[in-house]
Image (cartoon, rainbow, N blue to C red; front, side):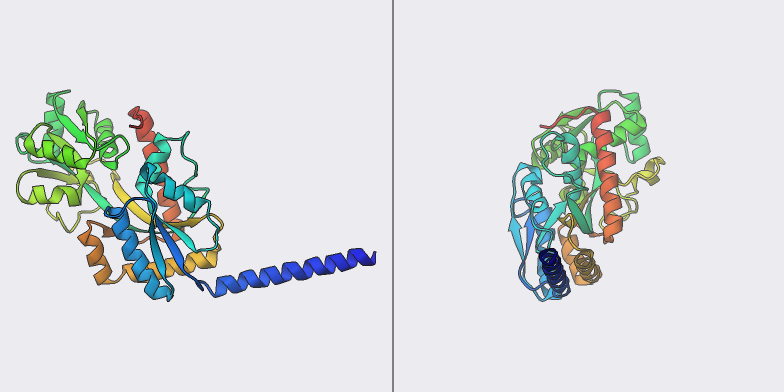
Length: 328
């Protein structure tokens, strides 16, 4: 009996000490270097955003946040590594959330992580809009004329894409499916070759990121018909949204980026990181640096970020199934 009481007392003391240590660790967070895993090679949008966020969080947290590029398998290697990391706030993922959601729909059997169950959102930080563009040889000046021309010429109007899992491809598939358009898909291995042929007139239309398309729009080599965001954007203020141009309700398709932590990361740590993000993203100099990479600041709370991730997963899974899209 005495041994049982002694064991219970020791166990209670140990648990109490562990709880106290855990609370202290959360209260003192961060007390060591934080790793920001960027699941793509240096140079792309995810890398640029991740490095801006790491630099600014280093200042606000008074602790070094180190970018760590772990590219490969369309971002899945880095994401899986973070999903399996300790849930202590010291390993974060700079997620290309739209790409991760599409990968989930395209490669269900090969993805080793669950975007909702294995992560806790810290916060969405920005989006890259898309724009529908046509070669100037296409005799249309706006989206209504494009739709009418496509319906009058079924199967003759081509559109380029940069890969099966690219948001550009899926946005076009969603658009043509909702409007019942018969467009001919021409796949490319990357945006560069697709844009070259679009400008050259070998293909006639495309949905592309604003940063990639903007120089060609500004020089008249491509004609912009609509942006895919819910509201007009500052870089193309005279170009209507898809909803404005077509009447299609709630058309809001972007490449979305945000920071994730492993599932189970304590809420006070998530809240602290998100509060810092909110302040950082309100600064004009940060917004300017983000826009320089074609990224529009779009701050969301952890709860709203979780809702948006769920929307992305549901939306893209439907598009992939309805259009019978297979992984490259």
